[in-house]
Every structure is written in C-alpha cells, then in structure tokens.
Image 1: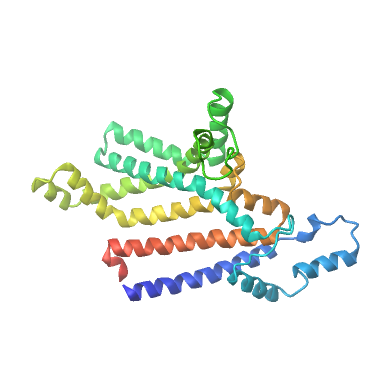
Image 2: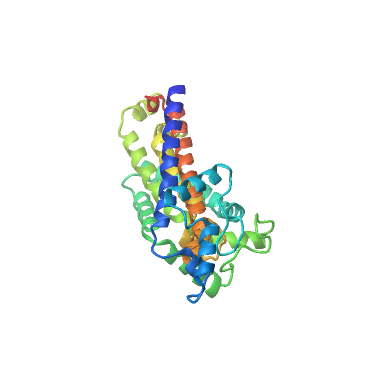
Length: 314
C-alpha cells in the first residue's frame, strides 16, 4: 500500500506542475494586453510602461512564470488588475459560496443517482427500468443553462414560490428557510447531470454483476434480498466511486453557466468575470485552484478504490 501511495503522490505532483504550466501559459497566449481594459486608448506610453512594469508584464514569460509559481507556493495568487484586491481572498470567498450549493448538489446526486441506478438494474426490462432510463437520459441531455432558465420561469416568475437569483440575506451559509429557498433551484439544476451520469453507471455496473453466478448463489443460500443488494453494491463500488469523484470535482469546480443564470457569486461566476475583464491574476488563480481540487479529489478516489478493492494496488 505504501508503494501505491508513493506512486500516486508522485503522479499527482507531476500533474499539478503540468496544470500550473498550462494555467499560466494558455492565458498569456490570449491576444491583446490585459491593461487595455484599464487604460483608455489615448493613455500616455509612460503610464502604460509603468503599469506593465508594476504587474510584471514587461519581463520574459519564463521569468513571470517562475515569479508567479514562487508566490503560489507562499499562498499568494497575486492582485486583481480590475479591483486591486488580493486574488486569494476573492477566490476563497467565491469557493465558499460554491460549496454552499455544490455539497447539497453532490449529496442529492450521489444518493438519488445510486438509488435510481440500483432500482433500474434490479427491475431490468420492466416498465420501472424503462421509466428511470428515460429520466436519466433526459437529465444527461438537457443543457444546464436551459434547465436553469426554465426553472426560473416556472417557479420564480409563473408560480412565484422560489427566488430567481441571489444568495439571500445571510450571504453565506443558510440560516433560515428564506435563505434555503435560494438554494433550491441552483442545487436542482447543478445536480441534474451528475444524477444522470451516476444513475447510468450504477445501472450498467449492477447489471453486469447480476449476470455473474454469485448473486444467484447468495439467494440459494437463503440470504435476504437486502443482503444480496448489499453484496452487489459492494462489488459495484470501485467504478462507481471513480465516477462520483469525477462528478464531485465538477461540482466543486462550479458551473459558470449555472452560477451566471442564478447570479450566484461562486468560483464559476468569478471565472466568468475574470474572462470578461481580462483579469489575468484572477483567471490564473481560479483555474489553478479548481484544477488542483480536481486532481486532489482524483487522488482521494484512487486511495478509496485501493482500500475497497486490493487489486487496484497492483
């Protein structure tokens, strides 16, 4: 197990280094100058040169990368060109807001997706299986932004039972039903695709396991149905956990479109604003941190899979 962990940690470090290179390099390949959005076209050249030197844009690209990487190791992601605030503080606040909707969406998606996939597999070929399959496919096919707009029109405009956008009065963790009501639509929208992905994965994996001999042997020994389901789900866990890890990384990364539709001030909306403003430090920091989240979640998934199935350690 120690050798497996060492190999995975080394692999993770190399991926994170590659992510830092990509996050820094691709953003600097975008045409134009980030300072153009701050300065009018008639700005004197002396002022432009001064700001370029202040933000380090006058130095060679590899020097800028090494300086930026050094600051990242110290927990400093730079200063926003547009607002003048520390990127680390803005990003931490945005990530906290994203967690407010990502965690409930993950719980809903994992629980409902696993339940629907299991029920469909144990009722293979029956009307219930076909109904669940249709619902799962619809969840995978409907675009996020379109579903969010439809939910807003129905529940906020037509029926006027839920708020259309925003976070509520608390501006953080919900403390009342009024605050919770702001979570309903974005959480439902954000969880739809993961429910479909996990539901299809669980259904296909459970069906494959049910095609083996051991479930029949368990029934022949007189085990109750719930015990048979437990053993089947235990064998279906490794691939399901892998898919859940990918979906959790997606949810924690936030969805630009979902957060934009519901005006939710999370990491997705922060990235959207950084792209629009050409705010390079914010964009670099957001991409790096979200990618690091995704990589670290996959590391945890690999470890969990190895604990569940010893064959994964080979």
